[in-house]
Image (tube, rainbow, N blue to C red):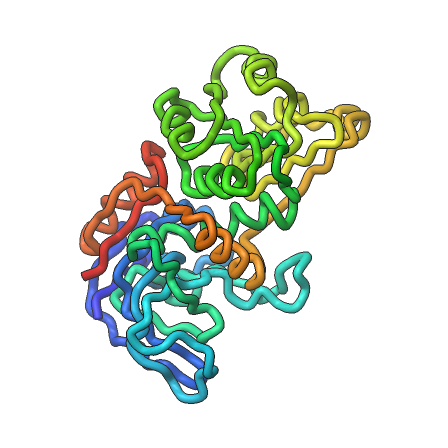
Length: 335
């Protein structure tokens, strides 16, 4: 089979022939038709990720068809030929409140989805919602799981609440908008570009503001008709401080990333006097994943695909993601 391999930090990915894996007991061999990129792939390539072990086939998100079963696969596993997608959160463990020490994300150190075939335990292979194409299905798992847990398991977003999603345009933020809108929340966004705000409105957001606008918090609160019950963030850094002002009394701020680095200024009085909850979130449990798929199926949610590249052009796809110009998910088509 063909696979995109990263051999060393700071090097481009290389398309090469690899042995097709053979499923063992309880495992399923999936022929992949599409794989989606995540910033995790770029961070690994740049050496900005913990526990890097190379060479490795990158890629956490994939959708395709069941090629064959290994022995002793559970009776309820997807049948050979079934359209499926993959849960990229491996070995979460028994505690739904936090992942186990041996939890990993698919695509390093385990071989990932930038390949024609992949083997996974049957428990991580789920039916692809019937209304999604392979490319749309590949765009869902990691971003959708992260957004679902942050919004609903951790922040407990309720219908009618006012929700702010920062940095819309990336895959997780955009799916957070779609999922919260589907649950009846009043969703607003920030972005670096008016165009991305306008496109988020096409997916249900009420409106938004550029986060580089002077006094953006005060202006957005006026536009939204009040401060925010829930704020969903992935940046951290110096941009986190204004979120304390944007939050309503008793509000919840949940974040799943730190692309802007450590938070330099967090005045305690703003947190305790407003009775704020600051919540961390990472990926999600198997139950979170199944609940995500149920919501996507019930509401007909379609993940936004930014651009599709052939597998052989994986390096160009990584550079598009790195540039940050995308709206939605960058996807690889696997012949």
